[in-house]
Picture 1 (cartoon, rainbow, N blue to C red):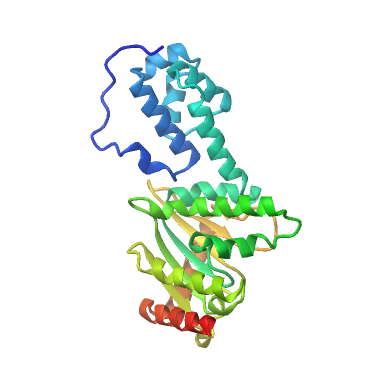
Picture 2: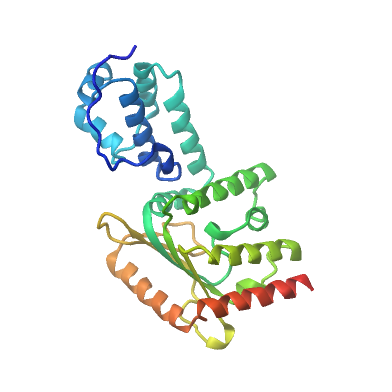
Length: 290
């Protein structure tokens, strides 16, 4: 049963709750928790007399600075008389992360909270810009993967792309190697659809897409792709480094991230301008058509 009290005042700049559906698990759960606490008429201090939790802990949960446990979500559901609403939310968010490889999950949090990302990809279309059919062609060929596991991973990859549908998505600075336009990852129809999707994505004011042509003779990025996430709130940038190993691919080492940023600048300097890059993609679509 809820307590009938005046809800504490909230900041005027508070965004709508549903605009955060693709932020990190901590942030989304925290905002839903705060919403239901206010709707139930609890202040933070009053809620902490019902649920065995410190006010400081509750504040960190609502601000997305601490991850919730399933036991706590159940206790909060009982306090708000919500049935299993918060438990189900936590389970759903955890399931999405669970479909991604263990080594990738730390990066997922940075990707969701980044203000901008600088990408270099020499081999395939980046996951954030893949069509469902292209992603299925890539993921279904993993060694020892079942059809069901492949479909779960495709769904998780499509879910990741939700950050691009926010009212204010991260800015993407993407450079693709020309070989990506010609490499037959899937049949011609899938490739045409993927390249057409790239053209449509390039029309977004948040996406700056360039192609590095063969005749640039650039070798700087041949060792592998990488992404640099420029974080908000004055947090330092973080890098995801592609490789064939299964070790830690996320780096927060300042010198390493700075070095990758310098490499990205050099690669972009050799890439085609955006309009010429779009023309090259259109030509590639024609080749896949014929």
